[in-house]
Image (tube, rainbow, N blue to C red; front, side, top):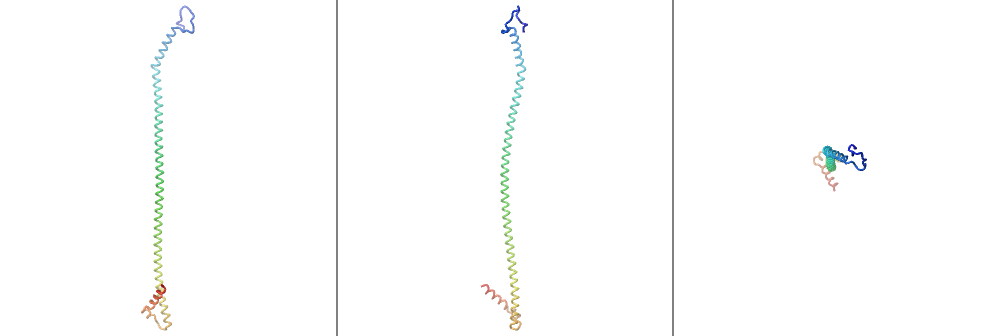
Length: 178
């Protein structure tokens, strides 16, 4: 920048700048600042603002996603706890139902057993009565035959007629029952 140098060939002090260079530098600096402020800085500001909005929007979206994830986690935990409670209730109901069924089956088995025992007792009593009747008849016949042999005449018709043998057996039973 020596084109504005002083006339007369004086040697200039290098520490002190030439006033013309200061003016030209100042104008160039002002022009550069004007261009930067008018065109470059607004674009940079828009870019920075867009980046800030993108970052803040990303943070907000991340926070919203985190909040939604936490909410879903709580819902899942609540559903899991409810499912566990339902499973325990179903298990308890099943146990109670099984116990009720078991009691019903036992009661029916007891009733059936009692019925079978009663039917067996009735059958035994009927068979006993039949056997007693048959034995009475046989004992009566044997007694009449024996008495006939002892006496020497046939007592069967007379014994049947008077029921002697039946009375005798009845008397024996009543004395045996005492």
